Image (cartoon, rainbow, N blue to C red; front, side, top):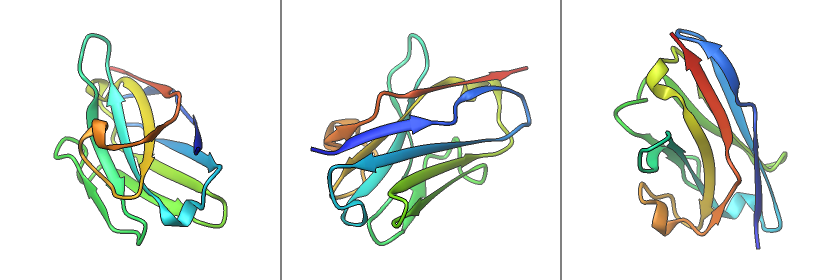
Length: 121
């Protein structure tokens, strides 16, 4: 069983930046891939980006060029650097883990509890 804990959410003005963290325990961090998802009230959970165990990344079109995923295998921590934030980025952000990264939430086995990001206009 892998436990994931997100942190770093908060309130930021449009155009600002935030960095989310996701700390993992319970499994060998370096063997896992991770995906970030987000969910706004009344909307379906949406894929944000992912990183493979080898470090390769891919992103949704809506965040490409603004968000960056990185991982620190010694600290067992995943990061999501969010720049040029927009009000439409407001959502609860979740990290998820599995052996392979995926854009599909149902393919990810382990989930964190989420952290709220609110972007004011």
